[in-house]
Length: 113
Length: 116
Image 1 (cartoon, one colour):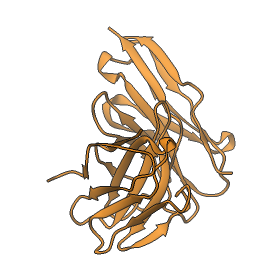
Image 2: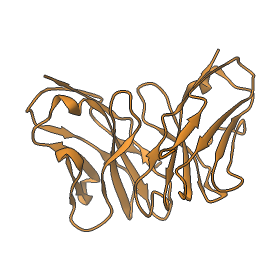
Image 3: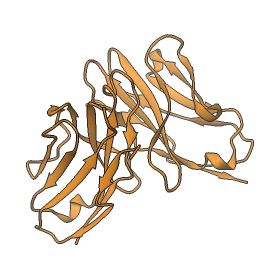
Protein backbone atom coordinates (compact mmCIF):
# COMPACT_ATOMS: atom_id res chain seq x y z
CA UNK A 1 0.00 0.00 0.00
CA UNK A 2 1.09 3.53 -0.64
CA UNK A 3 2.32 5.26 2.50
CA UNK A 4 4.23 8.19 3.91
CA UNK A 5 6.36 7.74 7.03
CA UNK A 6 7.72 10.36 9.36
CA UNK A 7 10.24 8.86 11.73
CA UNK A 8 10.30 11.48 14.43
CA UNK A 9 7.03 11.93 16.28
CA UNK A 10 8.19 14.49 18.79
CA UNK A 11 11.35 16.60 18.58
CA UNK A 12 12.56 19.03 21.21
CA UNK A 13 15.31 21.50 20.34
CA UNK A 14 16.84 24.62 21.80
CA UNK A 15 16.84 27.82 19.80
CA UNK A 16 19.63 28.03 17.20
CA UNK A 17 19.92 24.24 16.97
CA UNK A 18 19.78 22.64 13.54
CA UNK A 19 16.73 20.69 12.49
CA UNK A 20 16.20 17.69 10.27
CA UNK A 21 12.87 15.88 10.08
CA UNK A 22 12.72 12.63 8.21
CA UNK A 23 10.14 11.66 5.59
CA UNK A 24 10.02 8.51 3.49
CA UNK A 25 7.41 7.38 1.01
CA UNK A 26 6.63 4.07 -0.59
CA UNK A 27 5.55 4.96 -4.11
CA UNK A 28 7.13 4.04 -7.40
CA UNK A 29 7.20 6.34 -10.38
CA UNK A 30 6.67 10.07 -10.45
CA UNK A 31 5.95 11.78 -7.16
CA UNK A 32 5.27 15.31 -6.03
CA UNK A 33 6.35 16.03 -2.46
CA UNK A 34 5.27 18.58 0.11
CA UNK A 35 5.80 19.74 3.64
CA UNK A 36 2.91 21.38 5.45
CA UNK A 37 3.06 23.09 8.83
CA UNK A 38 0.44 23.71 11.47
CA UNK A 39 1.30 26.39 14.03
CA UNK A 40 -0.54 26.28 17.37
CA UNK A 41 -4.12 27.39 16.92
CA UNK A 42 -3.78 27.81 13.17
CA UNK A 43 -4.74 25.79 10.13
CA UNK A 44 -2.42 23.73 7.96
CA UNK A 45 -0.35 25.70 5.47
CA UNK A 46 2.16 24.88 2.78
CA UNK A 47 5.82 25.17 3.76
CA UNK A 48 7.45 23.99 0.53
CA UNK A 49 6.96 21.65 -2.41
CA UNK A 50 8.92 19.66 -4.96
CA UNK A 51 7.56 18.95 -8.42
CA UNK A 52 10.64 18.64 -10.62
CA UNK A 53 14.07 20.15 -11.26
CA UNK A 54 16.52 20.94 -8.49
CA UNK A 55 15.98 18.33 -5.77
CA UNK A 56 16.91 20.87 -3.10
CA UNK A 57 13.92 23.13 -2.60
CA UNK A 58 13.67 26.27 -0.53
CA UNK A 59 10.58 27.18 1.39
CA UNK A 60 9.34 29.92 3.64
CA UNK A 61 11.02 30.93 6.90
CA UNK A 62 14.40 29.46 6.02
CA UNK A 63 13.23 25.87 5.60
CA UNK A 64 14.53 23.61 2.86
CA UNK A 65 14.04 20.00 1.84
CA UNK A 66 15.99 17.60 -0.31
CA UNK A 67 14.41 15.00 -2.56
CA UNK A 68 16.60 11.88 -2.75
CA UNK A 69 14.92 9.56 -5.22
CA UNK A 70 17.16 6.58 -4.50
CA UNK A 71 16.23 6.73 -0.83
CA UNK A 72 12.55 7.60 -1.35
CA UNK A 73 13.12 10.47 1.06
CA UNK A 74 12.22 14.13 1.36
CA UNK A 75 13.74 15.35 4.61
CA UNK A 76 13.04 18.81 5.96
CA UNK A 77 15.90 20.93 7.28
CA UNK A 78 16.58 24.26 8.88
CA UNK A 79 20.07 25.39 9.98
CA UNK A 80 18.95 27.34 13.02
CA UNK A 81 15.49 27.01 14.56
CA UNK A 82 13.59 29.72 16.38
CA UNK A 83 11.02 29.50 19.14
CA UNK A 84 8.39 30.54 16.57
CA UNK A 85 9.07 27.32 14.62
CA UNK A 86 7.24 25.37 17.32
CA UNK A 87 4.54 23.59 15.33
CA UNK A 88 3.44 20.31 13.86
CA UNK A 89 5.04 19.36 10.54
CA UNK A 90 3.51 17.04 7.98
CA UNK A 91 5.11 15.46 4.96
CA UNK A 92 2.74 14.72 2.04
CA UNK A 93 2.96 12.97 -1.31
CA UNK A 94 1.07 12.75 -4.57
CA UNK A 95 1.97 9.90 -6.89
CA UNK A 96 1.27 9.15 -10.51
CA UNK A 97 -1.73 10.79 -12.13
CA UNK A 98 -3.89 10.94 -9.05
CA UNK A 99 -4.66 14.21 -7.34
CA UNK A 100 -4.93 12.45 -4.00
CA UNK A 101 -2.57 14.06 -1.49
CA UNK A 102 -1.54 11.67 1.29
CA UNK A 103 -0.04 12.86 4.57
CA UNK A 104 2.37 11.32 7.03
CA UNK A 105 1.50 11.09 10.71
CA UNK A 106 3.26 14.32 11.57
CA UNK A 107 6.14 15.48 13.76
CA UNK A 108 5.63 17.80 16.67
CA UNK A 109 8.51 20.23 17.01
CA UNK A 110 9.00 22.04 20.28
CA UNK A 111 11.66 24.76 20.35
CA UNK A 112 12.77 25.92 23.78
CA UNK A 113 13.72 29.60 24.06
CA UNK B 1 -14.36 35.53 3.11
CA UNK B 2 -10.84 35.09 1.87
CA UNK B 3 -10.20 31.61 3.23
CA UNK B 4 -11.85 28.20 3.43
CA UNK B 5 -14.78 28.26 5.81
CA UNK B 6 -16.09 25.23 7.65
CA UNK B 7 -19.24 24.95 9.71
CA UNK B 8 -19.95 24.01 12.37
CA UNK B 9 -16.63 24.46 14.11
CA UNK B 10 -17.80 22.08 16.80
CA UNK B 11 -20.47 19.39 16.70
CA UNK B 12 -21.45 17.07 19.53
CA UNK B 13 -23.89 14.33 18.68
CA UNK B 14 -25.11 11.03 19.97
CA UNK B 15 -24.24 7.64 18.58
CA UNK B 16 -26.56 6.70 15.74
CA UNK B 17 -27.41 10.27 14.69
CA UNK B 18 -26.94 11.86 11.28
CA UNK B 19 -24.42 14.69 10.84
CA UNK B 20 -23.68 17.17 8.05
CA UNK B 21 -20.47 19.17 7.85
CA UNK B 22 -20.22 22.07 5.44
CA UNK B 23 -17.27 23.52 3.56
CA UNK B 24 -17.12 26.82 1.68
CA UNK B 25 -13.98 26.81 -0.46
CA UNK B 26 -12.06 29.81 -1.71
CA UNK B 27 -13.94 31.37 -4.59
CA UNK B 28 -12.78 30.06 -7.95
CA UNK B 29 -11.04 26.98 -6.56
CA UNK B 30 -12.08 23.98 -8.62
CA UNK B 31 -10.64 21.26 -6.38
CA UNK B 32 -12.00 20.49 -2.94
CA UNK B 33 -10.67 17.93 -0.48
CA UNK B 34 -11.99 16.34 2.70
CA UNK B 35 -9.69 14.88 5.34
CA UNK B 36 -10.20 13.45 8.81
CA UNK B 37 -7.65 13.99 11.56
CA UNK B 38 -7.54 12.17 14.85
CA UNK B 39 -5.42 13.27 17.79
CA UNK B 40 -1.74 12.68 17.18
CA UNK B 41 -2.27 11.60 13.59
CA UNK B 42 -1.83 13.18 10.19
CA UNK B 43 -4.78 14.13 8.03
CA UNK B 44 -6.42 11.03 6.57
CA UNK B 45 -7.68 11.45 3.01
CA UNK B 46 -11.39 10.90 2.51
CA UNK B 47 -12.45 12.29 -0.87
CA UNK B 48 -11.66 15.00 -3.37
CA UNK B 49 -13.73 16.79 -5.98
CA UNK B 50 -12.81 18.38 -9.27
CA UNK B 51 -15.74 20.62 -9.97
CA UNK B 52 -18.96 18.83 -9.15
CA UNK B 53 -17.69 15.28 -9.48
CA UNK B 54 -15.82 13.15 -6.99
CA UNK B 55 -12.46 12.52 -8.64
CA UNK B 56 -11.37 10.09 -5.93
CA UNK B 57 -13.49 8.80 -3.05
CA UNK B 58 -11.24 5.91 -2.12
CA UNK B 59 -10.67 7.25 1.38
CA UNK B 60 -14.28 7.14 2.53
CA UNK B 61 -14.19 4.49 5.26
CA UNK B 62 -17.60 2.92 4.57
CA UNK B 63 -21.02 3.63 3.10
CA UNK B 64 -22.07 5.70 6.11
CA UNK B 65 -19.92 8.49 4.72
CA UNK B 66 -20.99 10.50 1.69
CA UNK B 67 -20.02 13.88 0.25
CA UNK B 68 -21.56 16.12 -2.36
CA UNK B 69 -20.64 19.28 -4.23
CA UNK B 70 -23.67 19.89 -6.44
CA UNK B 71 -22.70 23.26 -7.90
CA UNK B 72 -18.95 22.92 -7.82
CA UNK B 73 -18.51 25.26 -4.89
CA UNK B 74 -19.86 24.42 -1.42
CA UNK B 75 -19.46 20.83 -0.29
CA UNK B 76 -21.23 18.85 2.39
CA UNK B 77 -19.84 15.79 4.12
CA UNK B 78 -22.62 13.57 5.41
CA UNK B 79 -22.23 10.90 8.05
CA UNK B 80 -25.08 8.51 8.78
CA UNK B 81 -25.55 6.44 11.94
CA UNK B 82 -22.56 8.04 13.62
CA UNK B 83 -20.28 5.89 15.76
CA UNK B 84 -17.91 6.89 18.54
CA UNK B 85 -14.99 6.07 16.25
CA UNK B 86 -16.11 8.84 13.90
CA UNK B 87 -15.01 11.42 16.46
CA UNK B 88 -12.26 13.51 14.88
CA UNK B 89 -11.53 16.86 13.29
CA UNK B 90 -12.83 16.95 9.74
CA UNK B 91 -10.72 19.19 7.53
CA UNK B 92 -11.67 20.72 4.23
CA UNK B 93 -9.18 22.16 1.77
CA UNK B 94 -9.48 23.79 -1.62
CA UNK B 95 -7.04 24.29 -4.44
CA UNK B 96 -7.10 26.39 -7.59
CA UNK B 97 -6.58 23.42 -9.89
CA UNK B 98 -5.81 20.52 -7.61
CA UNK B 99 -2.83 19.37 -5.64
CA UNK B 100 -1.44 17.55 -8.68
CA UNK B 101 -1.14 20.80 -10.67
CA UNK B 102 -0.32 23.54 -8.22
CA UNK B 103 0.56 21.63 -5.11
CA UNK B 104 -0.99 24.00 -2.65
CA UNK B 105 -4.07 23.16 -0.66
CA UNK B 106 -5.66 25.87 1.46
CA UNK B 107 -7.15 24.40 4.59
CA UNK B 108 -10.03 25.48 6.75
CA UNK B 109 -10.00 25.46 10.54
CA UNK B 110 -11.82 22.16 10.65
CA UNK B 111 -15.04 20.85 12.17
CA UNK B 112 -14.52 18.97 15.42
CA UNK B 113 -17.01 16.12 15.66
CA UNK B 114 -17.62 14.36 18.96
CA UNK B 115 -19.87 11.34 19.04
CA UNK B 116 -21.04 10.41 22.54
